[in-house]
Length: 160
Figure 1 (cartoon, helix red, strand yellow):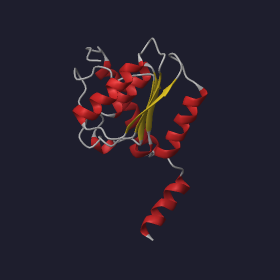
Figure 2 (cartoon, rainbow, N blue to C red):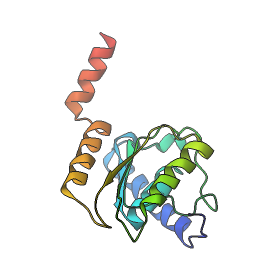
Figure 3 (cartoon, helix red, strand yellow):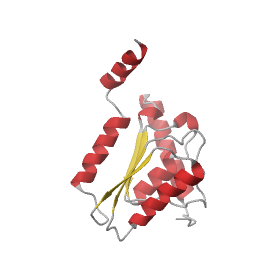
């Protein structure tokens, strides 16, 4: 978890540029974007999503069978992103990325960086994706990216 991870900063920068271009092209705010991935993609989503500029805070991060790559070696949480919602789905029988890595990622981010909204969901499976996991991911996405109707209704309800 505290390995050098050659190329992770460059990969993060590529993803960051993709997000910026999408924001500029479509006008979708960063607060309506989620990074999600499985295994290495989940690790990169977690690393990237928590190191973006505060003004580009995402709606959430979905990490499936990944971990916090590079740990304290190259990771530096951006102040203001501590409450970014994170769902980390992981198989307890995963022999590629051990379930212990998921727990260690959450513990490090919570204790050392003050991350507040990190949820781990475990599944009795190996390094794969299950239907139950996908349903949990869908619930998470619906929570962090409510439909425009729900968003408008929340604004109306809170102001009037």
